[in-house]
Length: 495
Ligand code: NAD
Image (cartoon, rainbow, N blue to C red; front, top):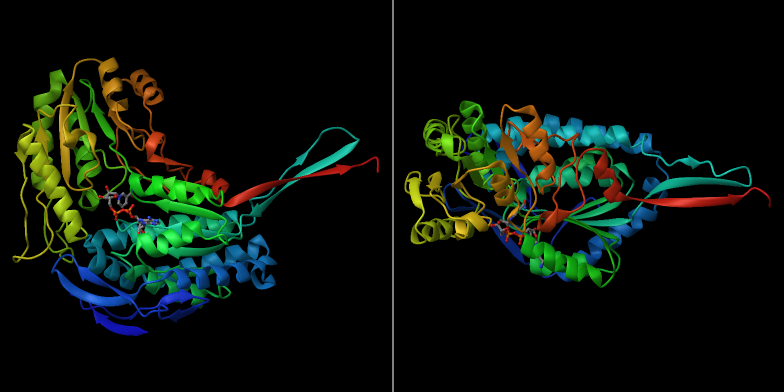
């Protein structure tokens, strides 16, 4: 159920291949597998077992049993917090291995995996460990005839479905608050990138979580994912991924009226006003679209620039992309941008680039494949200018290192353009005018606004979208609301 792997950086580890159910790795019921491919070399890494509907059923049963078992149910918040802190410590000990696996399987730069993604997991687990004994109800004074109080109780078995762009972090964002509140979990990994979380599953057992509290399965969305969403034994579904799949999940979850949290797509605007610090704006605009190979739901993929500074901004931005966006082997220290995660994603991004060319936008930079040693799903960082608001590259989520720059005249026009989308996830604005910054921040239809930065994410601050970018919040104190019920108890004092 394990295979020994060695990465190009020399790191060797034992990679689990099974479904993690009841703290054990098991084969899938029909022994079907999915092969993980290294996007840098296009070579097979290994094959892992893929859950069938019946395997999902086993995982849900294990989670249900664990939810009722006093070894978990009777733990105090403090004890749950201690388990989570132990897990955070183990993640810290295994940081290099986890980062190596993430880079091998996903293609993101190793330095990013090691210095940003793994620390995020540790931070999220520690943050919610701290909340585990501080998330309690209230006594509500309604006069002497009655005593009323609330209890915050776990929802039960939580089904969690994550995407491939941040396998470790998306899992941590969901596991942290769920375990903090005393739920049990069946986590379905993205079929493209299952390896890092299967390795982390070993640490969950080592940390001392009772069997069945966390079950981690790999599998296809339409098979394992859909089975989880429709399962009558699952109380909640938390999903991160595309808007189209989010809508399907919402429909499927309606059958059993499940509690849902959805974090879906985006086409986030970044507005540069004439009084902005253009050096700052171009630096963050680059981070906002080119980080993580452009595979970020909050990527600021539409840059709106006020007419008076349009040309200067475009020049500054172009300079930044050329200087910083070094495309290469993700294990090389100087690499900023690795390959897209899969061939399918690569083709999808190239298709959008083609449509931008055909629809008449100006291709300012990139626009072609950028293989490394003749291999890999690399896309050159791509910048389109003179984009029109009806073009596909302006309207649809590309999920790659490709940005659309458009001009605007007035603040009103900028707000209208920013809001002229079905999405509402992130948004950024650059200005030195404090009043305008806060005025525009209020007008933008988005779950998050960055003033003079972009894609600034913090585990203490709520993350989520409005409109078709999602329902509910993750991270911060707000993230706890997605994982507990508030039960009201009325006591008649005159009895
Ligand atoms: P997806 O939304 O289809 O997949 C995300 C997760 O949902 C995976 O674990 C998948 O197995 C699961 N899933 C898929 N279909 C399901 C179903 N019917 N029922 C239950 N679970 C299901 O995304 P994708 O196909 O990997 O990528 C397509 C596009 O989605 C990307 O190009 C990008 O635009 C977007 N995307 C967004 C995010 C994000 O963070 N918002 C992440 C990944 C992809």
